[in-house]
Length: 170
Image 1 (tube, rainbow, N blue to C red):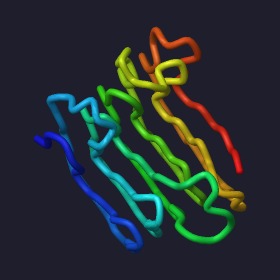
Image 2 (cartoon, helix red, strand yellow):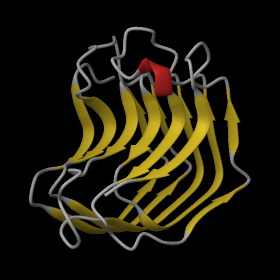
Image 3 (tube, rainbow, N blue to C red):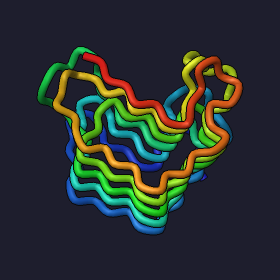
Image 4 (cartoon, rainbow, N blue to C red):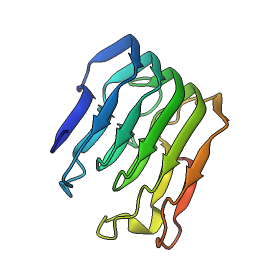
């Protein structure tokens, strides 16, 4: 169990390539209310490429996953791409099950996101979501595939809460 911090972290200016997680379970808690607790966090200038996750779970964190990127970062720079997630569960994460500001060439198969984004004290509560893809930085993001995605009980009680949000901004 993790209290504050990250289960897995790709720090600023780092690059993680050809990583596979199989049968990994990250459980956080109690809540930190700090927006700095995640099962997996890829920082704003870090990159993650050729990343595979199979039969794993990320639960009870502020964020299950957070792929961070600055709005004004422009083309080039950090990226999360060639991501393959299979048979994985995101459950009970306070703010978002999966939040991505950079993501390309990603496939999610048999992924479940449930009972996430229910916290009513989050500054961004109006837009709580189980999965929130909010792409930034004027990139040529492409090929986001969701196969057999199950999303239930996410963003309940939020003004515009959703199970899955897909957005882009420069």
